[in-house]
Length: 318
Image 1 (tube, rainbow, N blue to C red):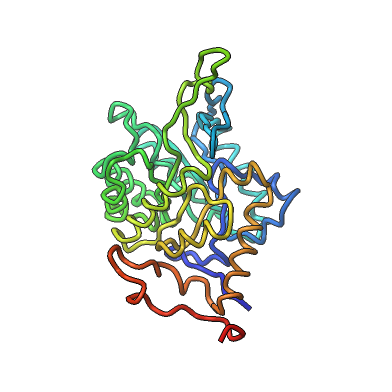
Image 2: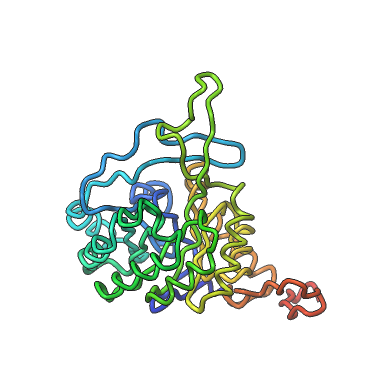
């Protein structure tokens, strides 16, 4: 039997496959067995009710999807009273995802979602910081360390910092998150993009611009995950363009301890299970007893094939 387990700081997961926030809800239990995935990362919540952005909020593009949802939220009360009890019945650990406009609000919200049934908090620091002229927290290392430091003081739960690929210094931001006390970094959120409807000459999205995700972003975010895995000692969770087991394996070999599946679930609601089964099949075919034995196995730049460690070969191939 293949061991697919992984650890994210103090949290042990049965396997490394989990949903990207915003692409998942408990309603998916009508399609897949949620107990099979490694963790349930729910949609980002805010303290107050938020209506979200104007429609259209989603637009298909070549090789991916644009979205500008605007983090619609029913607020903290709905999370505590309705969401948390639902996930107490599911074996996979519940990972809360939160967003706020200021450092103090982030810390207070993380404190208030730290209740029985929540196993970790993913902090969406890709959102605008009203105290820094609207720049996202994760655009700059100093803002990242500041907000993570205050969140760390407010909760004892593991903190996963979700980074933005729109920064020019992803490794520096990851190091800042680690310095502030994050237990893991999620690399990464969507890339800012735009498309135009040539029938109306207007942007495809109601808000003009939005986040680009899907297969086309994988080489970019895989590169960022690789850079972060070499910049920090805390676990890196890869996210971006993962729709197959091969995609997930690239992130793991690049150094990731877990992966998140997002846009692919909109296309194939069973995508996470397909990825999970593909990981297990890969290990069996390669004679690997433990998936995480190949984490970070990618050779360094400039290294030749002869420098790489030997990989297990199935007995029938010898």
